[in-house]
Image (cartoon, rainbow, N blue to C red; front, side, top):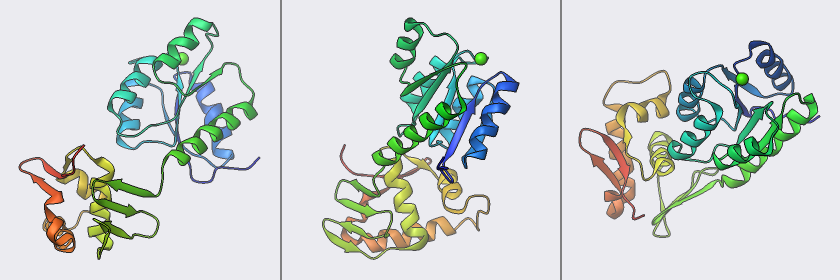
Amino acid sequence: MEARQGSRILVVEDHAGLRAQIVAVLAEAGWRVEEASDGRLALQMALEEPPDVLLLDLGLPGLDGLAVCARLRQQADRHIPVLMLTARDTLHDKGRGFAAGADDYLLKPFAREELLWRCQALARRGELGRSHVLEQGPLRIDRRSGAVFCHDRPVDVSGHALRLLVVLAEAWPRTVSRSELQQQLWADEPPESDALRSHLYTLRKALGPSQSLVKTVHGVGLRLDVPA
Ligand code: CA
């Protein structure tokens, strides 16, 4: 079976034996697998770094699968495909799962192939929904080529300044804190404190007359200022 190289999946299952089994099947098929056994931790992990698919058990300590799914739908700034996993095969439970925002359902016990097929289908659906062209107000950003247009005029921006713009556009309408921006731009190796400021200056200069699109929210961070 074709492996989905590099797609990330978060496996949330409190039964250690079953979790290990699922993780092994997915890893063997080429998935990058992360795991959690507790609902609260799973929600935190999924919000901090959204996986391509979330495999979510219904009965969990901390926060059950339905609550994790419902909160994810409220708090995540993009749609994370959720495959709900449960032994409770009644129609009632399925209905509750879908009402909480699950995309698909898998009943225990399940065949290895069915697990892989369903995960792959969800990841594919997620990809289709994520276009490489990002449009916010007068801005159009092609994430693949790095081309940026503002009011249909090309904007000459690249490197970290471009990355900064993409992070803000993806997060819109949220204000992104300085620490989160540093994390997104430099991961675990933050440079000296003025680097962000200098890239912000470069970005604003490139935007020219539209530089007020990148707004400083004092004491909080930066936000893309385009109408909703
Ligand atoms: Ca369970």
